[in-house]
Image (cartoon, rainbow, N blue to C red; front, top):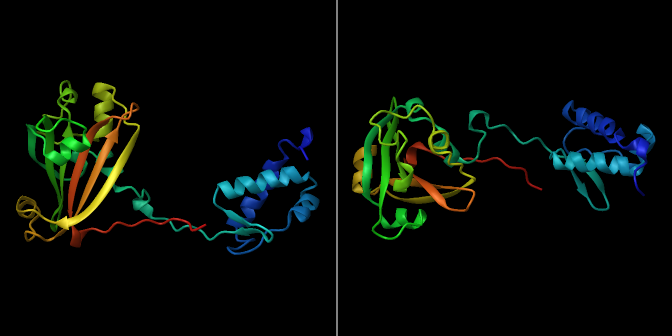
Length: 245
């Protein structure tokens, strides 16, 4: 049955009321909501209006509907506070070196390693620009970061500067080159530290590390930068919180 014209905005009242009841604990997690028939009678609206309000509550993650049983309030997903973003690669693209106690180790043109060339879709043996720095805290180094770029992106930027960048890579490239990264591909590997990595991170060669590889992809689907971060395994954990349907 199509909604009546006068009911077109009435779902908002139903939605707001049910949402408030859920968040105020009137309907605790696990509680079954009143039936559609009961809601139609309570709010004096049509059934399609109630269905629309319930659909939006499901979209917000506040309820789930079980066929033949009804709609139930979902438990609250706990907040991760300052670590709310479950994608650690986003931080690597957005954090400013100047804000992360970074010490620049290298900024220059080198032959891209095979893995870097493959992820940037460059021919084997191609030169690329790398900006490598180590981040530490009061207890010592916590990550070694290598940011790789095709050479055509370097001119007109501060990527070659010996000073820590005062803005994130993604923002800097957009401001200087109008390069917009449409999405990222994030890969996480667990392996042993190389001798060079171990020296910088002050761990034993072969010690467990997490290797985070984040490719920034432009709107045309081309990888335009690669961030390669190496994190000592005993100083980091990857954590996520998500609802279970």
